[in-house]
Image 1 (tube, one colour):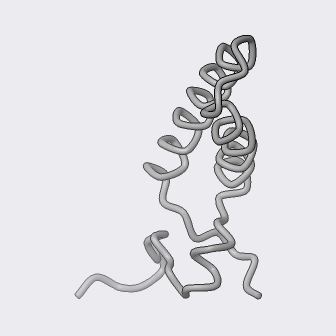
Image 2 (cartoon, rainbow, N blue to C red):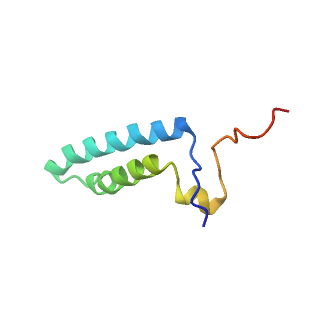
Length: 75
């Protein structure tokens, strides 16, 4: 399994915001014990961790790489 970065900067920023949103919503819903709580709580740390690492294991398994190669010459 390749552990090199495979997320673009826009995906990293989006994952941070969505992860923070999921954490806040999960925190509010935890008070009411909503079924949605069980979706948001595990989702938040996964999104934040993949954003911090810049690596998505699902993308790696599927061979997807959204990081642009900056070392190749322009065509």
